[in-house]
Image (cartoon, rainbow, N blue to C red):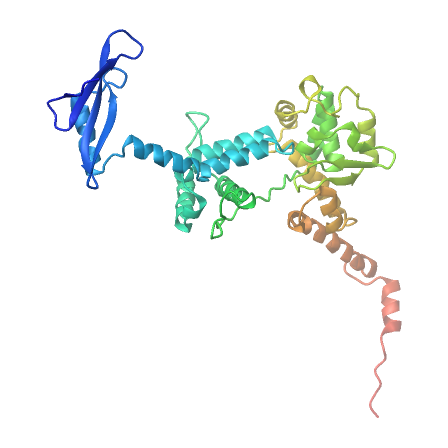
Length: 405
């Protein structure tokens, strides 16, 4: 392979056998001086890389000016990057660990992956946690707050990401880096990520008329699974995912308890089985390990069609979430009864902390106020006058004033 010069300085070629075809083709090289040493570099083939003497000359000029790294430099950089635990590598390792966790649903994994690819990867994907600064995260937060949410129809008004989505994205970044620190793959962030404040307290309040229509729609629905799932949601206060995961082995008819595996709080819980819940469960057909099986007897993953049908039949707003609404109805009725304290309610709802149960505190306070008002009824009649019995008793109990001598 004889070295042959071109019309461009520092550019030459050798003729070799053509790749993937008959005949020969030219392989172009450049020669230049860098750091007081002569560098000879292959830059591409005539046909396979569409290389020309002019293009090779431009590459040579870029090398000399430092505007473009050489292939060797690129290989060394890639090798160094492959040995570094960037956020991309940490995410891949973290995602694999989640896929092995049965408590993590496929939907949740999909949501995390979408947030990572869309919001985190473009900014932090190729960076190591040690190189992330507080200002970088603050800039990401600001950009997220300006990012338009995905539109599902051309006629919809554009809207930005909700505060909850912004917080969830920052939380995902925090979880990825924390995973690297816990597993010894990379250091933790030297600062704490400030999370935006999000008010996620939503109580699906219904008036008496709406409640009647709601239950009537449940009882009238032709789908047995829909009726039973919604009944059990009201009778036990269980979450949607907990109902879908419920198996026959989790039901203790003898002792009267229901075991909840992997609730939102993280630790397995046991809740009591009341009479109505027992009736629903005992009447269920056993066709699978799951009490409310999905397709082919496996775990149920969706229930939206039936829920929307019942919600619409009851004439409830489109924003109303039926299963969430039944859970809140369960909690509200217990709290307002005045017979269940907030700690017991927390245990029944399997809340991880009292803060979640505190949203029902005002209902408990209303019950206490009503109890405190009983004294008015006992001491006074409806016109605000003392009853004869209480008036006489007050006279007898009132000390007589002694006249001064």
